[in-house]
Image (cartoon, rainbow, N blue to C red; front, side):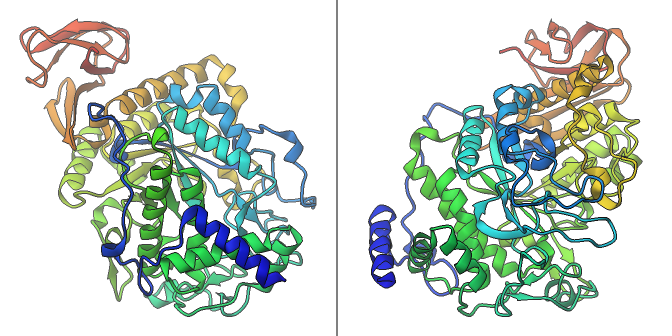
Length: 568
């Protein structure tokens, strides 16, 4: 009876989405794939969004905003925890509400990356920090379901649709390296799926990959290319939830279409790409890049890009642009000076050649501390246009697991905004950077100090309002002008410090002139022929309109910054 039901479901699903054999062995034979025509954006439209100059807002789902209090207490996650180590109530609905409120629009955000929302382990662990639940989202129990503390699949769908309606892309945070820790409620996965030892020593390539990141964090055997059975615990879970047959049928369809081996990594790739083909997720932020063999990332990238094409072909009226699926990697320790390669000591790997479009730049906070504006900007522009042609980096000043942020005491909040948002590359705002959310919380242990609840009440403070306006002006200018993050940098004058950025690629042209550290009141800015004589410009920081005369403009404002662009 079970086989009969499974066969019927399988055939029905095949009729809906197709089951053509289009690939070979453990990879995609691109020559046999008929890619859907997704060139539906109107011919005369030239979207200004470019990934390499985008503004990402990264938030911890549980700590950002509580949009639905009814899901705060679920799954009996009720043990007393260490400070800020339990679920605090933030959820998917809260993110959607802030999109609808215009918070992200006003901040100039065009990409949101939120911590993983798939189902997490139910139990807690205690490693000297007090009981800790998986509020952060990186301890997966089931990749196919949304964790009830975060919300529902329907709410995730609404979040993506609301974001897209507001011209905001969504980066899904994905974890392929490990499951969650083993607890009484969360049994270890089979030996064919995971290893529980040895712990990584990082001495070379093998001791960084075939190992566990920390104790009691089972490592997925992504190097295994053989067929494996699904974990019995997962089968029983799906059966109890009444969705076993549909899950198995969908798995059959995926592996029939792709002809990939039913290996651990490919099961997870199937589960992760489902969110792309069903919801139109725009990109991934990939966790723990260097701890997985690069061929696994190549397969993930191939399948994600195909899933995105499939979604676009079925939703031509929902297209934001013609960009491909975007993949941002967290290659811990990667810095812009490392060029394209990561050095394991015994092997160098170019992860950009294995599906990644961009890497998080762990070096930015050091450069921002040591370099003045011109040295910082020119260095990053030169590197992006010479060593990383076609690829890019993402800069940040603080994050969820970096214990040494650029400004831990929040003493340089204006400088943080100016350097982060005006440096070439993608900018990543960590939730609360824009309103000085404290990064030092008393009585916390470890990285919990970086993960406090969003300090929404602070916005009522006049000083905080002024700081937020600074972030908003720079952020909106950056969003509206891809030249800021993705254009070539050129200094016009050192005193006063004025520079230009120019971008011309794929039919998109943009240019701006920016001045920093200028005198208050009237200041004369040389344009250096970036714009023609007589052009009307707008200083987007003060709102003043000026006309170019003798290759210069005179801006009378109370601010030390000018952000000049052509009036539209």
